[in-house]
Length: 363
Image 1 (cartoon, helix red, strand yellow):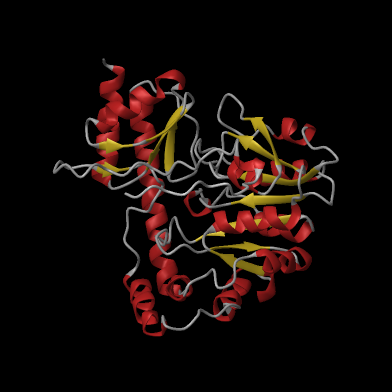
Image 2: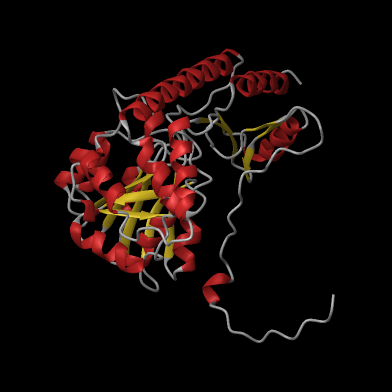
């Protein structure tokens, strides 16, 4: 390679201490049977009709996608009981979260969120000049809403609530969030990130529709990446009140929701697809319960999970446990010296997780 010229460009100082997003480690391609349980992906391929819609849409891939995504916004607006203009779309809920930060957070403004939570939060906040205010989770991996309310200052512009919380799994109840909102100033946006909502027990899932109707500072974040199995197509959305929705439309990347992503998302909202997705969600919930019960029998004491994953709070042993599993054909996600997350994947992978966890305890 020829010598490169000196680079004297000026980069933003905010990037100096910015953490890097660490994606789930892929399974090694070494010929052995391996399972990837490190990225909270769906173990199911897209529904046939959804795949067909995405493939058919490629005939028009020489054209830009509908920037207004009118059909999809209308469908989602109907689903959530809001005007289509109140739906903000982008390349996954993480991108919508970035739009939210750009819309409400200025240089030096604060964003409050639990930690550990979604890996991208501090990156999104720091990259736009905001200050992350990370409030430690409780000993059971839950949001400490009392401490989060106390962390709000005059500089706070945004609060992020991830429920069920990634990577630990516990969720928030409607009463908990309602009480928390009563202590948040009305000019502070509270984003409820529900990427894993469909895996929650439907009988006790957070009543976000009512919370949204009652509070003008609440915005909901959703994704098609998890249960719908469209992680590779990248599409997610926010449900926002009109003023904030307009602001999100001002800062988002034009044409972010691609032609096949819009087609696939729209097809996944059809009644037959919704029925199949409900069956898949029930399968994941049953597998999660089976795995947690088996682990409890082995003596593990894990956080109660309502997501499509379970979390091992192993502290200093986290990396060692992840390596132990990897050597036995299962790729997990380690979080520094805090814990290890395992996605509820194919049944064979879940069986292997139980086997590995038991072997670990018997060492």
